[in-house]
Length: 451
Image 1 (cartoon, rainbow, N blue to C red):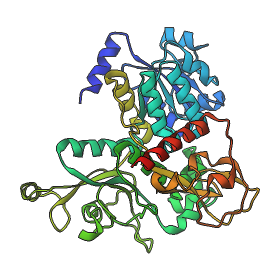
Image 2: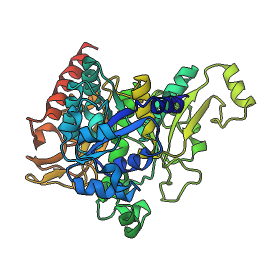
Image 3: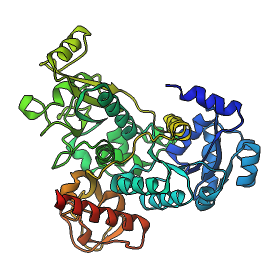
Image 4: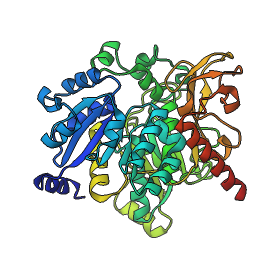
């Protein structure tokens, strides 16, 4: 509860936390919009494959030109300004950088950047949750071995959900479920970048004004991001996931305690201790009032009559039995909140969530009948969407992680709704992401057999 005063102290001492940002897209731009308001944090460099686009985004969010006009990283470090370039490796390796923020949104590249940063003794805040979903546990282990910190990005829903779960457990409550909200109807599974804005609720003009990427936003709509983020939450908290994927039960924030109980008690859960997503639409497509579409929540149980009575005495919203309650954060502000992670990692040497196990995967599911020879285009595209599965199913059955379903050729035809497997694709076996994932699968299989 004292991060901001500590940041102020670092500023007063002339010793800010020095960070490097890789990827100046939507998330990165949102963080950069806040950076000038954050004492004790110095963005030494921004690396992007298109420096001109990065500079345009800096202009767009209000940075004066002179602030990012440093000729190189050394110049930026000395003057307290920022250098914009395209060399991510140089940014990572610069001795003045303490924390690397990986925000490319490109899973294989993100894994390479993380591992390279660990090798240079740098902490990493990984915004590219698609990479965390399929090899977060491997990255966390690699960071621990290197003696550095690997962290989720505060502002994204996984880190915020982990925060709520940690709060509930630290208070002594029994967590029955946790997750995020979403706007969901089954037909959205087939959505493409061409249909996303009508479903999302924005006009094309509004999307263009905000420089919004239709493929990225479609990844939210078609169920991919909910699967990805739910996998990350499960792997960070140790919660389980539904065997056949997310149910997306419709409900308001006040419905969460009733929904997130075991089926035996009138809820939707197969059992306690699970990740789920609540939809803001009824199955008929009607908007639910007081929804949790943009937020996160945790549901927990009071296991004694005394705690039940406390819930009643303090007039909290519970399920009909009075034993289940929820706490929620109704909104998440994405990159605008990233300063919390930077402060936590830089000041306390503490991650804002990281994978502690390999419980779950977001796997590639065919959006339509796919023919052999087609190229998969990853989350939010035209060919596949994400489906959440327990690793006890996904690993033994050889399911292809969605984060590695980018620009890979299908070797066999796949029916709509079927999960794509490693055997169905011509995978790039030379990437660091592939190698780390396969190492994780071997370890996960061994653990499953031992159990």
